[in-house]
Length: 168
View (cartoon, rainbow, N blue to C red):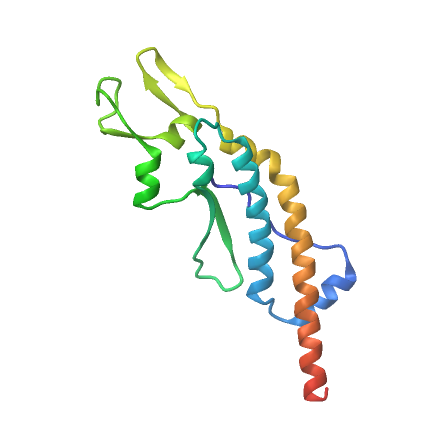
């Protein structure tokens, strides 16, 4: 699920002053704020997943992507990977190639999200992951902004403590 890119802007002079005095923003500030937003989206996706046995719900996770830029953190909410997940989430196709696909296995979460080809034509997916992300976007933004403010305050307090310790 590729989502929005959020840029935090402020009309608060005190916050802007703190950020300027902090200098370079510690990575933990951005990382924890982005993580809170991704957790909100993951929780919404787990609530929206079609449930038969609960297997898909257990495999929804948030994972952080590596970035070459310092201070940038991107999280992806989707299905866990690995052999165990593939074994649990793939379904064998009875007659591969009959309805267009050549694979012997179908990835069940993708089929429920985007649809599949069957004897009666294309079955439309329910788009549960996209819908959940869209509905949770505002709550995720609020969670990120709150966590961002908390982490900036912590970084500010740490910098102040270092200044006092060094006698400035």
